[in-house]
Length: 244
Length: 94
Image (cartoon, rainbow over all chains, first blue to last red; front, side, top):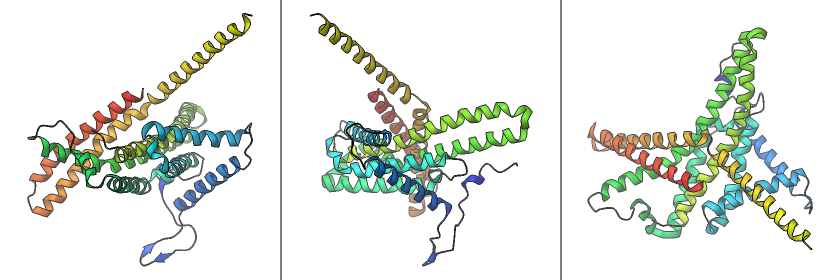
């Protein structure tokens, strides 16, 4: 069973082919796992917040922990002005986290290991933050590209560098999540392949590596969701509180 | 009655211990490999974006290959700026 370690990332169609105006809108395994993650989140939070006990049970405790975790993250990084954006950041964090975690189950598919998924999320955040910045500050928002205390000779150069730095945000945001997830899952598959090919005599070493890597991957899955959400908060902070 | 006071000081000590433990845990969690990877992507992304902008402007103004070279270096500068900012942010968090 020498299977290709990249095979786990193939997207294939489930059910009938749906084509609208030349665009393939068929239901794939990627869409299936997005639906699964969303359903798990909704069920989990619904059951967690159904009975508002004073002494919470485990489910309620965990969902309240998620709530306070994200609320604290937003107030720490973006201040009180970012409160209205809590629902967006919370759902973003939960979606990325649950996609990563559902991807950790055997035979499942990791949605976030595809650059197109992460890039769309990052571009959405980038465009939304830019629009929010212009809505709050008007054309004064452009002063984000002009740092204070720069000599006039260097100003055009610095401005161009700042613009490139600003435009690189969605790229680094999406590539980070995608690369982490894809690299981790490929590693897991490669070590799994070693276990099979070395057999019962030599397979124990890669098996122990595999176990350790699984633990690491769960950590990475959480960490990347956290990083994704906190960077969104930081970008939002730049848009809401103009200061240099 | 010395017991309440004694209890209070004991509570204080226990609370500070818990707080210290929490702080330590936080530090450990942050210093993981995630931060190293974060800086790498910051650098590469800016270089890539700079080069792409250079390429687009080159085809627009028909000045191959000058703008792509200039914007490659500007992108590298922007990447370093990104890395410095991210590192500052990490330091502030700790």
